[in-house]
Length: 407
Image (cartoon, rainbow, N blue to C red):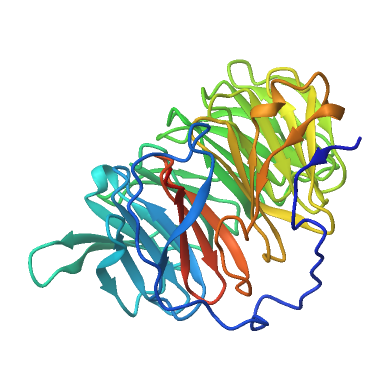
């Protein structure tokens, strides 16, 4: 099925080498005049522009997190630096060196910062604004007593779940560092963890091909959706996401997406896809009406979340998709293809107006129209909960901040 799109830069193909190669064009200028956004990026303000460049990290930024109140952003890098940024002016509030952070999270009420290293050791920091501003380590704990592979945070920011290579899952209350559940979840490495938006459930996917849902915070088994000990399982689950109202669970495997009812634990329907077409990203729109999947295929699939009906396929010729995020009002979709030379912001307004998927034309902004420099290669992105900031991570360290374009 063909989809016509207004895509200026989509024909360019990139067969660059591995992630560590240097860009062909020199790095960006040292500074960008910081502009504080007054509104969220949305259907009312669908145009975005580069309004800030954060230059501190000298190596890849491993992770970023936005504070709940939308005033700060934290970053942890492969250079062992942790930074907290003031989003009002783009300046650093705190810099902590010699901290091997792979993930970073703000704690409840933005009062603490939690960093987690590759071994699953969590460090809880307080942030003292009195001169001289500094981060103080409050406590540390090991997410698991064996090698921990994954960590994710609950939407209310009060819990961290750690998945181990042994198949165990532990749930910790933060910032107190109290263990609330120690679960022998699976017989092989945990591949994916996700909390439900209502903070009551945790889904775990394992290399043993198991798929289970646990109550939070006690870790009681709610649904044993796929048990490889009871029957042979052909497809390994790759990633999962709950609907915004927590009533459904979407799970992607090699060749499709299965939707589960979280009130009964029953399968609702299965969406067949091309191979690995939802292995890169699987997300519901915030209003719960759309389900988006993208992966190793050069197309982004969009389905009606309540019926599994095909809505549209957005082509990204010669590329695959590694990350996607919706605007809070569900009208815009940003996607990051590999090998990271492009970035696309799709306006989904025409999805509701087209008589059929064959007639859909989606307006799209690309790297050039958003004011991003040629040369740097991106590897990840994050959209703040309040919709005002999109952070795009350069492999070499700079963080590019996109906001709604001024009228």
